[in-house]
Length: 132
Image (tube, rainbow, N blue to C red; front, top):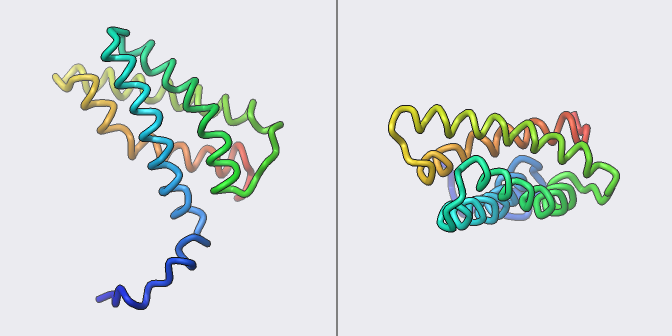
């Protein structure tokens, strides 16, 4: 059993994946907030997701690059953008699949937050920032 008093929060901040999860929560709240807003405004889920993803890419590039991977290299924005195009299509497929079994787009988007975050970490680590 873990003694919670022995956990050093400073050491947690040193772990890349834990930083990614924290930044990912912020990025997910931003992205899902945009997605839900666009759905509320009456957009189809594919367009709502596209717009939310586009806004999210700009926001996430800086937070993920700087806080998770320690990169301030703006030249990587193209690779980062390509990774989110890939993630967008995987997400659309997931929402469509869940909608086919009767799950509303709001809930489907929420269900896919964690799987898409894991996919985004893998793609960013190996394709965008090359910290293998």
